[in-house]
Structures are given as structure tokens and as C-alpha cells.
Image (cartoon, rainbow, N blue to C red; front, side, top):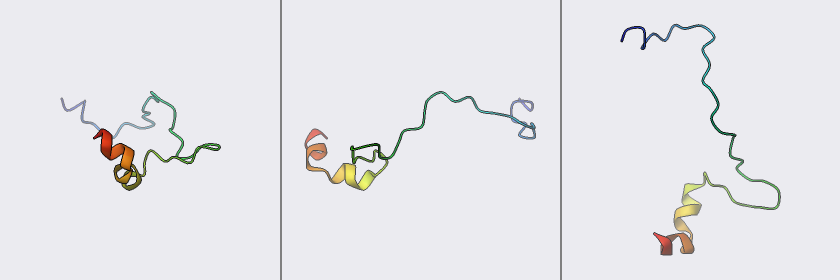
Length: 48
């Protein structure tokens, strides 16, 4: 277990498993990371 927790590994990388989600793209004005906007939206409240 000591080898597993060894954080002194040089040049360690974490594999990328997905692409970055854009905050806003093109004509779509929607930010999935804006939690206040998401949970104050009337349609979202209806679904919850």
C-alpha cells in the first residue's frame, strides 16, 4: 500500500477520459456550471 500512496512520482499523468465541457458555446447561452441559475429555473424546479 505504501507504493500506491507514493506521491513523489515524477512526470505522472492522469489519462483524459472526456473532453472539456464548454461553459458557453456558439449561440447557446447555457452554463451547466451555474448552479444558482439551474436550481432557480422554474422548469427545473418543476422536474425536481
